[in-house]
Image 1 (cartoon, helix red, strand yellow):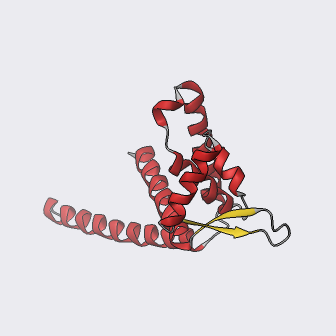
Image 2 (spheres, rainbow, N blue to C red; image 1 turned 135 degrees about the vertical axis):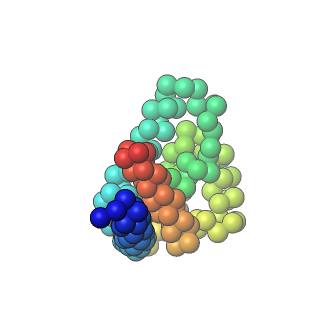
Length: 155
């Protein structure tokens, strides 16, 4: 077997591996996007939020203020865990003044990322829910972050 034949076979193997890898990646993406009970994503998002809180404790939170992202994270996490989160809990979760939280909830609601839904049991309480499109977008984002972390781990 000549060197050129070996190179050709290796090239063909590399191409096959890339094709199989792409199929697996696409299936993984589809599984995660379609599976609301995905444990890996739930754990990852929880750790992501813990890391943000740690960063805010160690480094001035004023440098990293991102109320819309904090609200989206809280509502996304609630949906991943099949839980409801009230307007008041969302408004105060990002360590911001309540009125600031309400203003950002309004902003996210106007662009269709979230919506409010009255509690069936207690009409005085209102929950914040995430639209299906935003939920898919957030899942896709975290899937890509997970993939990147795997790439870094094995490179």
